[in-house]
Length: 160
Image (cartoon, rainbow, N blue to C red; front, side):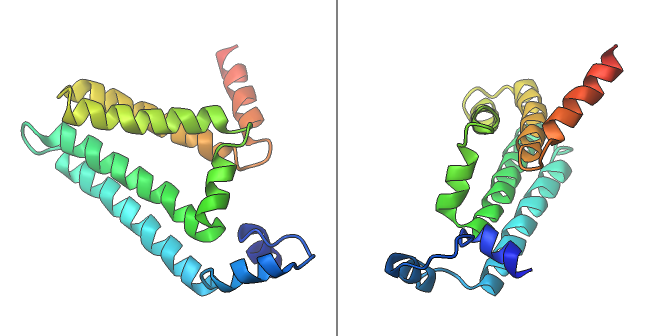
């Protein structure tokens, strides 16, 4: 468990400089990080569920669903910043292995909100929500070693 704490908080190296001690002293404790992660993740799930329930509201239901679903996904991704720290989270999001997936997720977030607020195209918002789910799945798989390769092979076998 200690090794997991060190890796997630970016302290996986053994040498301790004065700067690392200052940074460590100004960060959240491990317990606070876990509580923040759980709270933010729970808010994300609640927003997504609320969006699903609002889907059945006449006229505005689909756009409310798109907005709350997107906010829920943003909160869920943001929750991992509590575990790693926001700077390390951003660095890992934009690593070459997951750069395209990150860009697709952020683009889908923006296009979902644009289609709900500015364009007022409910069907388009629903399509972007579906694309958002697929992009988030692909992004999440990038954190599991060889998961993307396994998914690609499964689809290749299913399609042949």
